[in-house]
Length: 180
Image (cartoon, rainbow, N blue to C red; front, top):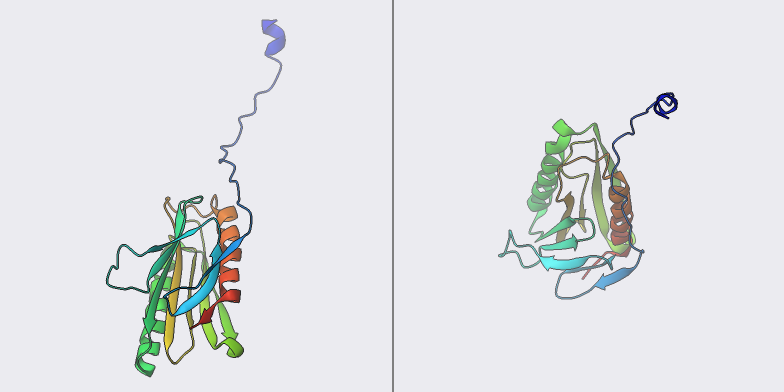
């Protein structure tokens, strides 16, 4: 029995990752005291941003299933300078990930009927801390910035299914978004 068992070749198995169970696609309307409204995933919850208690319109879309969140910050536009400043700040924050990324894809948002304009930064690469950032504005009164983060060491290769799943939810946010 010992001699016959030695004829089989042993092949080591590659390291695997846990199977990620993705929740059903359902959405809830966020329509309350904020100067904006949109639909967010039913598996998520809205919380105030604990790092900015003085900013009443800043929220987090917490996704406990994925140990992640979308930080949403809002600022009223006071003049053309503030629009330029917020746009530049958003670009600077997105480009900080350039060192760990393999590239940043920019996607323009323009919907004149809803007065919705913006830019999405899709940050590719294994070590980027935030794989998805965006801003939305009406270019006269409102400014909103969002960024996706996970409570994990950045390994966007293993997070790819989750990132893809959440990106479709953020796309739904864009499609249902409106200013009040």
